[in-house]
Each structure stands twice: as structure tokens, then as C-alpha cells.
Image (cartoon, rainbow, N blue to C red; front, side):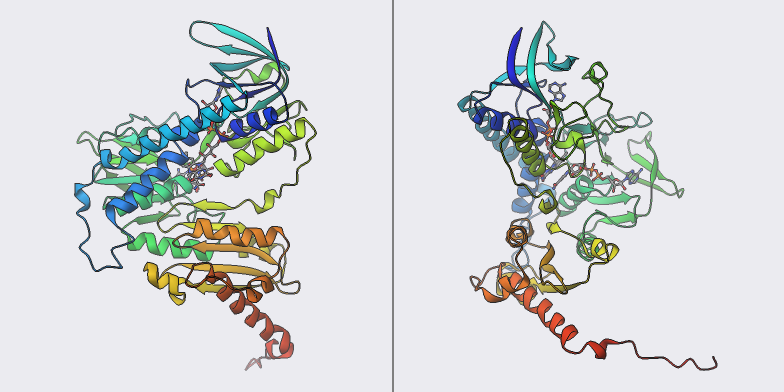
Length: 479
Ligand SMILES: Cc1cc2nc3c(=O)[nH]c(=O)nc-3n(C[C@H](O)[C@H](O)[C@H](O)COP(=O)(O)OP(=O)(O)OC[C@H]3O[C@@H](n4cnc5c(N)ncnc54)[C@H](O)[C@@H]3O)c2cc1C
Ligand SMILES: NC(=O)c1ccc[n+]([C@@H]2O[C@H](COP(=O)([O-])OP(=O)(O)OC[C@H]3O[C@@H](n4cnc5c(N)ncnc54)[C@H](O)[C@@H]3O)[C@@H](O)[C@H]2O)c1
């Protein structure tokens, strides 16, 4: 039986970074992957394919350029799925090579097969033809998630699809119903609408992406409707069936029916823990297959860690990588200083949105006094140059300390722009950093200065004449 310092289960972003960090600390590491190919959902079905698809949609439709040059928009019906997927395969191939090389260079041994716990230190790696047993001092579970597929729905992978099977569609549909206005549903709805496909997006909650800032989401919903997406909010899909004429019909709890060529079902994901024999070590996942961990990513068994999507929110490739790194550092006593509350979120809708820190709703709930400073892209020279007049950036500023509590952005480059705010927040900076520094002109980064000035002007008003804001006493006639 082989013995190593660490076994990592799963080769997605969480597993990769856990394995490399442990190897960098001089430990012997085995990375187990059941799919015979490295990369996880991130490379094969999730982040990378969907972002490559989006990039192709943006370039082939010319959606950003069309407002700029008065040129004739392309005929969207000429764009095929092959055109969109072409680049996707290239990017995936390169990413796999890069990751494989990282593992080799760092001496991480890869073993293909499905990991099953035998006991708290021993893993069986099961392959169709053989089984190998490995013993380890530390084990990191980074097994990710798979799309939630209720047993009441028949996924035929042609008309009724999830985000995995969507990428294997033979051709683009003319119309599509998307069930679930979370991150996946919103991103795919935007891509499909940009291609001229008729999209109905059904979301059970009153708004899309309920964890984000409501002003930003209102702006996004407005832009999505303008692209032709029909939003059915506050509606829950109860039944899905393929009709004899080949159309898919979704029935909502309210009794309404909608029909389209195909349906994408994305109402969340399920932790990949069912087949790991976790009962043999005394770990019990929750009803969605997720594992509970402490702040060091340890499960109830201290030498068994769990990281990435398998532990639930925020379930991003970016946060998964960091969790993997932190788990290995903790296992081998390497000091770290991470700030999970400042993990950013980037959503690649069209237009993209991004956030870091608190939302206005959270600050209000917590009773934290704040003021908002806003910059609209249309007031910024770079916004005009890009032809993006709908973009905006909002700073949430503490009323007394002037510290930045949150940054929210929608528009071109929002997912990149957010990191300036993140850095200032991490260094406990105030709104004055943006006021007192010069930004390249013309850039979108200038939004920070404009939003900071806007916010600090409002704060000055508040502080200079406190009595002027007192509510005038109303005389109620007839009282
Ligand atoms: C459509 C879509 C778009 C996304 N877009 C973004 C984005 O833009 N930005 C972002 O940050 N995140 C995005 N995400 C989320 C991101 O893909 C995940 O957060 C990330 O992949 C999670 O990494 P992970 O390492 O935890 O798990 P995964 O990437 O799921 O990898 C887990 C691996 O473990 C393997 N495994 C499971 N069980 C076993 C076992 N018993 N034995 C051996 N191996 C096993 C699996 O085969 C898999 O390869 C997206 C997700 C989806 C679905
Ligand atoms: N850019 C990114 O970072 C990115 C992109 C895509 C996916 N992801 C990750 O992938 C994961 C899964 O995304 P997801 O969109 O599948 O899940 P999600 O949990 O984000 O959203 C699911 C949505 O479906 C709704 N819903 C549930 N049942 C419904 C029903 N019967 N009818 C109508 N609506 C219903 C829920 O209210 C919820 O808003 C997320 O955790 C996300 O972090 C991230």
C-alpha cells in the first residue's frame, strides 16, 4: 500500500491548488480524479466553456461594437453552435496542458479512478479493471458538484438539458425556456438572447441573483428585457414535458404554460459526495450533498478537509482555489492571512456585473450608517468611447469612518474593475484614497474618483447641516 502525506480527491480548481500548495511545502501528494482528465467542472462543463462561449457570442454578434460604428449588425441566424464551440475547445486544450504541466513540475502524482473511503486514513481508488489503496496523513475532499436533476424530470439531453448537456447540443434552438435565475440561468439567458434566440427565464424569487445589490440587478433586468429576454419572476416551474410535436412545455405553479424548442434547467447543484462511502468515516453530507467545515476548512475529522463547491456558497472557481490553498497551509502549519469576506463575485451576464463587500440591503439590516457614491459610465469619457452608456459603479461608504464597505458595478470591464475597490477595502482604505489620487484618463477606473466625489459630497451635506435633515413636523388636519 502506498503512503503519502496528502491525498486530494478531485482535480478541479480547489483540488489543484490544495495539491500544489502541499507539494510546495515539501509534502508527497497524490491527486485522484475519476474522469480520466484533469480540470473538473471548471474546465470541462462550467467556468471555462461558458466563458469561452460568451466571448465567441460577443465577438461573432458584435454586440458591443454595434452601438459604436453605425455598422450593419451581423445576421445572427448565420451563427452556428460549431462557430461558438470552436474557440471553446482550443481554450480547454490549452488549459489542460497548463494544469498538467503545473502538477508535473511540482511533483504531484495523478491517479485516475474514483476515490472511496475505506477508513479515516485510507482511500480505495476504483477503476473498471483494478483497485489501488492509498494511505495518507491528510485528505482533502474537493469533489465539486453536479447539476441538480430532480427524479420527476426526464432529461433527454436534446430538448430538456442541464448546463452539462447544453454544451453537447447538436444545434442552437430558436427558442428556449430557462428554469432558474441564478448565476447559470442569467448568464446563459444573456448569451442566448444576444444570439437572437427567444428566451423565457423563469425564477421563483422576485428578482434574479438575489444575493447581489438590488439596484444593479434592476439595471441588469432592464438590459436583459431590452435584449428580448422575457422574465417570469415570482414563478415556480412545477412540471416539464416534451409534447408530441417536439416542443417542450413548462407548467408553472400559477397554472401558466410556456413552450419552446428546448429547456435549460439550472436550479442549483448537488455536492458530489454520494459515491465516496463517507459513512465509513462518519461524515454525513447535508440534503444537497454538501459537507460542513470550520474556518480552516476542516470537517468534523480534523485531518480530513473539504474545499470548493462541495462545501457550498460561494461555490466559485476563484474562491475554490483559495480554499484549497488555505486548507493545505493549515494542514502543515503555514501561516496565512486571507479575507474571505472580501472575496469578489463576477457574473458574466451581458452586461457583466461584479461586487465585493456588503450590499445596501445587508448594511441596512445590520444598522450600519452608509452613503452611496455613484458614477455612471455615460459621464466618463471611457464609457462614451466604449459606447457603454448603461454601466455604473457604486461605492458604499461608512458615514462616520469613510471606509469603503462595498463596491458594485455593472457594465464593460466590471469584473476587472472591482479589484481596485477590493484592494482599497482590504487595506482598510477610505473614500479619500480615491479623491486624493489621480487616475489615468480616459479609463473606466476613473469611475472610482467620480463615485468617491459623489459620495463625499453627500456626506458633507449630511454633516454640515444636521438639523436641515430633521423631518419637518407635520400638522395633521382634523387630528
Ligand atoms: C456553467 C457554469 C459556469 C461557471 N462560471 C463560473 C465563473 O465564471 N467564475 C467562477 O469563479 N466560477 C464559475 N463556475 C463555478 C466553478 O466552475 C466551480 O466553482 C468550480 O469548478 C469548483 O471547483 P471544485 O474544484 O470545487 O470542483 P469541480 O471543478 O467540480 O471539480 C471536482 C472534480 O472532482 C472529481 N471527483 C468527484 N468525485 C470524485 C471521486 N469520488 N473520486 C475522484 N474524483 C472525483 C470530479 O470528476 C471533478 O473533476 C461556473 C460553474 C458552472 C456550472
Ligand atoms: N460567474 C460565476 O461565478 C458563475 C457562473 C455560473 C455558475 N456559477 C456557480 O454555479 C452554481 C450553480 O448555479 P445555478 O444557477 O444552477 O444555481 P443558483 O443556486 O445560483 O440559482 C438557482 C435559482 O433557481 C431558482 N429556482 C429553484 N427552483 C426553481 C423552480 N422550480 N422554478 C423557478 N426557479 C427556481 C432559485 O430561486 C435560484 O435563484 C452557483 O453556485 C454559482 O456560484 C458561478
